[in-house]
Image (cartoon, rainbow, N blue to C red):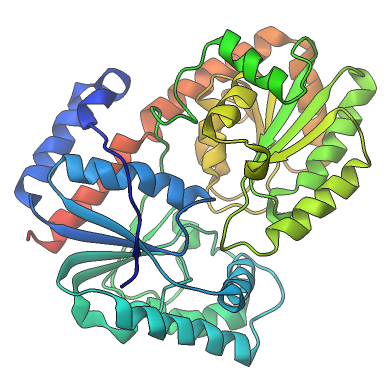
Length: 411
């Protein structure tokens, strides 16, 4: 059997004061005829990255409204995750396709996991390319299959997408963050649904300034000096080296500036440690650059504290499927500067609820503008939080999934 993931309990009613009664009522109405529907979420890892963070909230909320939802994680060894990391990068535009042996490894582990998949699911949702071949191998194990893509497929490596597409075309349903991510030639019914954050999760719940200051102090930050912060994986697409360069440019005008680069290391990201070490090397021992991850006891509350206390939040991605860290950061009502790529422009109206940038120099200029004018930062943060409240919170995502289930039929 595949490894089940234990999730806590969530109550949809707890979100009412945040999203309002109309949305909560709509969710309950959509869920009522679907009571007892058996839904399986299948992913590559149970921690690290946006997919797992979404599922830790989405699965218990599905259960709360009467869906019999489960989440299972596929089995894989280092050779598999090395191959799927290359697959992920190539689908986002990296020049190197997988070798014949690496494609064979990917297929072998999909076959192995397909054999272990239990049967009689009403809906099986397969997240991202790691387990994407499973539907073609055992379609009889679920009544309705959905492939959920969480990455940017707008400019994929042509050889890579050519190899993967036949597996994706077998899915009756597929879901993408943006229309631009839908590959040419997709069969079945295609949905465009952005992801969402959980405003009640420890990473996003309201944190008092005093508590944020206390946590930041524990990690050696000087809470009386300005702070710039990026929360993301240590990955070339997130450009942590560019964030350090941005910090150095801004530090010319604000010599007291500090930088916190905070990320989690995921089991399906073997390159993460290499890039973490490259980031540390690029910092060149600067005591005002704090590079932290979950192995430094940085968890959700700590991330919340860094974001809540920061004067400027950064997400300097150069390629991004969606970038939930943007909405998570903006939810703290702090000013955000982010790369003008992928799904980030959906979350930021440039100049109104944050800034979108294309270069390191632009990023540094926007950062110094905010540091010079704290009132501007407060206005950007306030408008940004309202935009996230209206568009990118978890009850809306639950509603969108229930709509898909309803079109697929009841239990």
